[in-house]
Length: 242
Ligand SMILES: [Zn+2]
Image (spheres, helix red, strand yellow):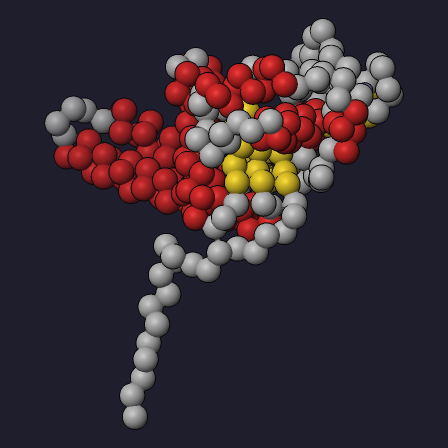
C-alpha cells in the first residue's frame, strides 16, 4: 500500500470561476478601500495596533545613546516590530486582493502614482503604510493568473466631483465632505462609493474602446480614457454592474 501526497502549491491554484461581476475600487486612508457596490474594506485594527507599537519602539530607540547596549537592544525591538507590521500588512493585502479577484471578473482602480504621492510629506506616512502600490501589484498578478482583468484609469479623472448617476460635475468639493446631494439630479451620494462608481464606469468605457488594459498605466489606456468618454453617458446610471 502506498500513499500519494499532493503538495498544495498556493502559487498555482485552479483558476477562479467567472462571475460576470465587475467592480470599481476607491482606495482611501480612513477605509482602505470602498467598492462601487458600496462595500467598505476597513484597515484592520490589529495592523493599526502593530503600527503604534512600532512607533513606540522607534521613539524609545531615539532616546538611547548611539553605540550603547541599550541602543542595540532597542534597535532589535524596532526590527521585530517592523517585521510584524510588514507581515500583517502583506497578509491583509493578500486576503483582500484574492477575495476581490475571486468575486469579480473585472476590477477597476485609479492610477494613484503612489511614488509621486509619497513624495508629498503630509500624506507619505499614511500612504506608504496603506500599501496601495503593493495592493495593485497583487491585483495585477492575481488577475493575470486567474483569468480575470484589471483596468487602471487615469488618476486625474475627477472621480469624486462627478455625479455617478447623472454626470453632473461639481466645481469644488472639500475633502471633508463625506456625503452630498447632486444639485442636478438630487441623488444622495456617499463620497467614496460615488467615486468608486465613477472609477468603474471610466474603466469600462476605457476597456470597451480597445485600450490595452492589461498593461496597466500605459499611455494607450490614458488616451483612450480621455478621448472616448462622453461625459453625459447615461450608462453611468447603472453603476455597480453591467
Ligand atoms: Zn446627479
